[in-house]
Structures are given as structure tokens and as C-alpha cells.
Image 1 (tube, rainbow, N blue to C red):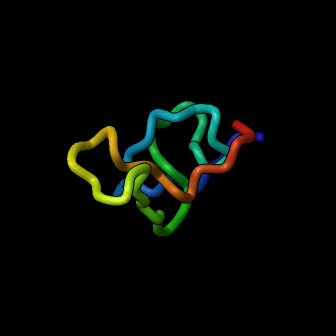
Image 2 (image 1 turned 45 degrees about the horizontal axis):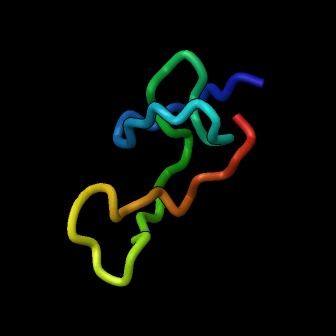
Length: 56
């Protein structure tokens, strides 16, 4: 099912996420939660979208 509610404030290219707007590089959520993969983030690779849900 194509998600029509793109949020232009949240760019996203993760097509395997259920919140990804197909055909557009945006998330459909109103807000996302950003988390850390380590105790202390030191670079971009140390962060993640904690709102990700598999199901794209």
C-alpha cells in the first residue's frame, strides 16, 4: 500500500521501513525518535532512527 502522507520535514530513503512514503523520499510520521547505537554518539554512524519499523 502506498503511503500518501509525506512529511516534507523528515527526509528518508529507507524503503524497507513501513513509514517510508513510496515514490517520495520522505517519512509519513509527524515526528521521529532518534536514538544512539552506543552509550555516547560520536558520529553519524552512532545514531539511528528509533521509529523504524520493518515492513516497507
